[in-house]
Image (cartoon, rainbow, N blue to C red):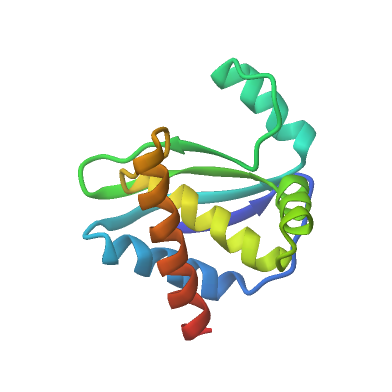
Length: 139
């Protein structure tokens, strides 16, 4: 089951379309969607999560907690709406486009993609772009 909840920040978007597409993304990556939660929160909330669980003292747009077992993709995507909005503004792109990119980025992590090396970052960005295009063509 794919769920979308808001801790303390809200965005207006079609939740049904996003849930359907996340499932489609997972299936395209040859896996099965398990329990995936998309949690919308503030910079401050996610900073506390970052400090508590990862011992990192900085803002981030997403933290992905991976509970995947085998080919059953499960996890929590904690997304800072504040960071998404700031990143969109700084990059001159639409807020919803940036939000969807961040969601797909987190789901791709659950599917096993990494982004620590330059090579991995290039693969991740290419996958994000592929799924963004596919998502916007379908919606």
